[in-house]
Length: 174
Image (spheres, rainbow, N blue to C red):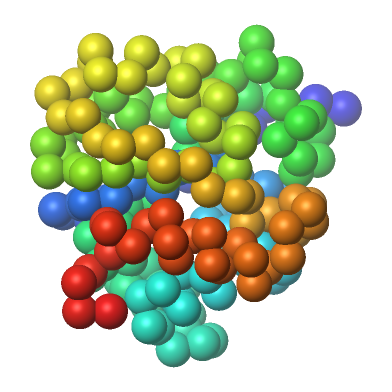
């Protein structure tokens, strides 16, 4: 059965260089009101490695680590219909986007928008005519999904790809 879902609010670094966009949080993330809450999702292990955070940091400290690294976090889809947690279960016609264009206007220093998975990128391109709704022109960076449902790439390879593609936008002292 399809349910109407509403995404989480943005994690917004005051002087964000990088915005990482997912599609829509999964069931566990929505229930806990925390991004990437599923214990097998690779997002937090990857980010803690890239930002040299201690394993086992609690959620508020993880968010603080992102903010210090000038990284913001959000989802392209603000509301949608979906059964379960898989992106493939979201009918495209049911998507209503978050106001990412307003976010971009507030952050002219933004250098890149990275997509955590293909669905985030597809939804962004569907809803936002890149370059026409905001004054900044961030680079668009495709990343493999950190979802445990995306098992075509091993977690160690996902980490290598995230590291290589995000390196120009991470703090230089890391």
